[in-house]
Length: 384
Image (spheres, one colour):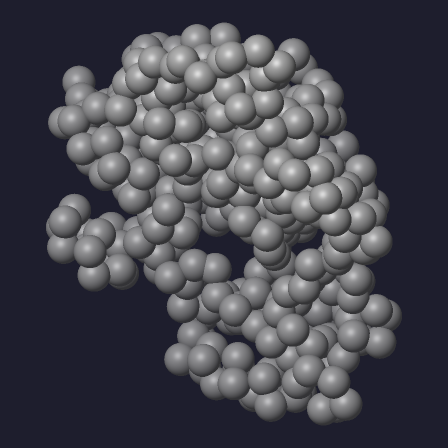
């Protein structure tokens, strides 16, 4: 089976993306400018729902800007899940606020909504809801709680383009802001990059200001003007979070293919679902009828009694020429969060069990039928 190593992920980059970058290089303007603005317009149009889109250099930057824009500050609390990448929580600490971690729902692997209300205190300012692996969390249910307690909702949609729930795309749901990632393994990529979307003009204006040093005019407007236009004002101590035109050019081309990429991932997921079910493993949570799953990740779970074997399983998969990963090492096991928040694994039994038994299999749009079948065969051969 070792004819060719099947990587865990691989971006699909074509001539359109290459041509777009070459055009930017030849334009004489490389940083944020016309292409970044065009990418924002295209993205807002893709989602619909009268949202505004603010391009940033990473989803981490977008989450930071979103929390800052909704008013999170020192001493506040922000509820989120332990079962996520550290970026979801670290942005809370950037602002001097404190994360409050909750366990996940076994039916979705997203935050356990039933635990949110009991975690709210007078210090609670916001909730960050993670759409895990590309399945949509129930934002409507979260919004009912948030409204009662006057707290903000920020969606970590790093995995969730394009995903939907109840006929509405993630990014147009009932939250204050949503942040997408365009990292190299996402459904669409700009290499590094992200997008903050919101219906709130106030949040959009604040994010745009803070995205680039808190300056009231961007460099493109100052340096490309046909009349003297050097003057600017610093309105706040902002950040350096803008997206370059080179990255935006890739994003413009990728966005046009987003539904094709999603369909390809969904086809792979359906093949995995059908073939892997018979091996006694748990396949990922499935979307409800009519919902769209981006299938950013395909996470299987080995039987609980095999949790001690999980690492051996991954090693065997590698020996059979298949790259795998684990999503995630929960934050309650990470030294900083464990110590800072006084976390113990007993506090998060679902996340802990999912971590101990889960394996993420390759799933990306350019996978061939032969590669898909090899992954399935490797799974069968790697089981004890």
